[in-house]
Every structure is written in structure tokens, then in C-alpha cells.
Length: 162
Image (cartoon, rainbow, N blue to C red; front, side, top):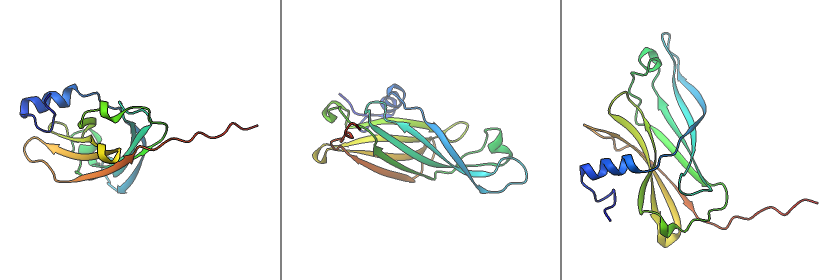
């Protein structure tokens, strides 16, 4: 089986399209720059659950360009983001059944050719899920990235109250 990491361009595109994608819920956007015309520049915080690992949630913050172009969806957002993933419930999946690398989230950050992706990478030796956020652009990608790890731990349940 070919992994997305070692695949050619056509196979990589198929991996990106075929992978189940998480949907993010926007939590809050905070203004960072006031603009007289159009929307302000902002940093937005979103959350998504790993589609194949119940019990893991990731929060991602991303810079979003305002102004008139941003207001109508034509602006290119900068490749600045941060990610934090945590175990939020019991994880019952055997990580040995997961692919070594898999895209779990993707969001458009320009009208045509730029996206932010989150990949899950397995660290089987340490029983840890590693989430890497990257930005890509067809012509010239960005080295900007952010990483978060989730060690898989037993999930304690609270005793029933009396």
C-alpha cells in the first residue's frame, strides 16, 4: 500500500481527496487590525474532532485577512496558525489500525490555490498521535507549520454521585 508521504503527485492528490475530512466549528474571531473599509483582520479559533479517533479534538487558530477583498472572499489569508489537540474522552481505537500519516482536516485560505491542512502522524513507539498543521500553495508553499501531540492515556471516569 502506498502512503501519501511516499506517493507521486497524482497519488498525493488522490490521498488528499479520498481522506475523510473533519468539519470545523468556528468558536470566535478576534479583531487584530481595524479597517475603515471592509471587515477587520482577525484571528479565528475553530475546533474539529479527529474523524477516525473519537476522543480527540483539535483547536486551530488562523489569521484571516479583512478589508474589502476579505469581506467578499477574494483575499489570501496569511500562513499563520496554531494548533492544540487534546484527548477529550476515552480513545478506544487501536492506533495500529490507522495509517502512519493521514490528512484529517483542510480549509481553503485563498480563493484558488492555498489551503491549510492538518495531518495525523503516528508515533507508535510512544503510543502518541502527532498533529501537524501546514499551509500549501500550488506554486510556492510555505514553511509555516504548527504541531501538537496527544499521548493516548487511560480515560478515568468520574464516580457516580450519590
